[in-house]
Image (cartoon, rainbow, N blue to C red; front, side, top):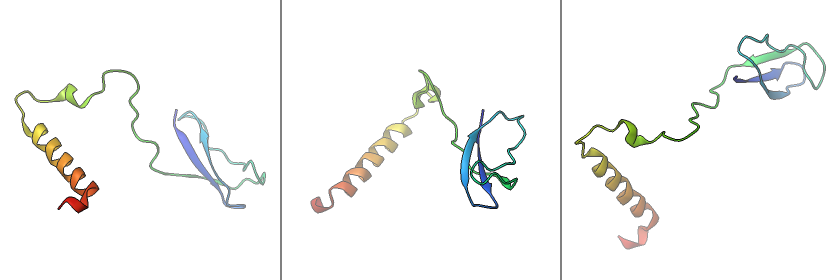
Length: 87
């Protein structure tokens, strides 16, 4: 079930409501009790993986050495940013 964001046109109250996708949109504001709510389209929470087994190596192509090069480049870049006095 998604979380929808609502905004009241009357009192500018903004809140989120956890609803089923087939539920009708809310119309009455819980703060001012006016029928002035608008459902806001936003980015949402994104994709969330729960449980074991979701690793980057699950779909790794065999024989690929780019992963090692990329991780060492990222590590070096991270060390350079955190130790600017060593240059």
